[in-house]
Amino acid sequence: QVHLEESGGGSVQSGGSLRLSCSTSITIFQIYIMGWYRQAPGGQRELVATISSHNDKTYADSVKGRFSISRDNTKKSITLEMNSLKPDDTAVYYCYLGGPYTFWGQGTQVTVSS
Image (cartoon, rainbow, N blue to C red; front, side, top):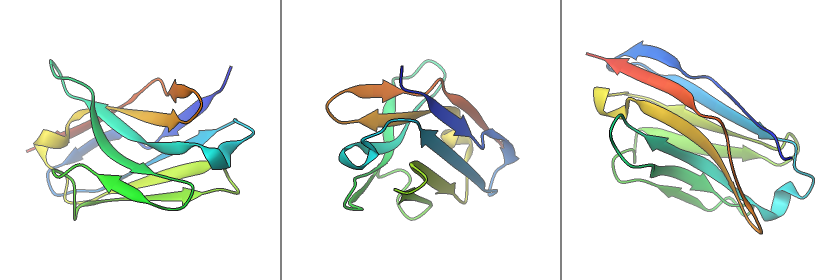
């Protein structure tokens, strides 16, 4: 099956930064949209950011101006730069690979303390 490898989760204090990365083994990477979703305790899984093969980007309103997503088609990976983190950003973050089929990473915990 397709493997999504996530890294960069952890614990930081409010105002800090983290960098999440996700790489995929899929062969036809260029036709897929990649991104990140998150799920807070007791909440629903929600969009954080996505990036297409044409570098079109989508952000949740709650992270605009603080998060930045990028894509490396050679390495088949994406990176999410998260700055000015707030406790509301605390969630399990899931890497997303969408196209003809949809794949999800196992999730990585991000915890932001006050």
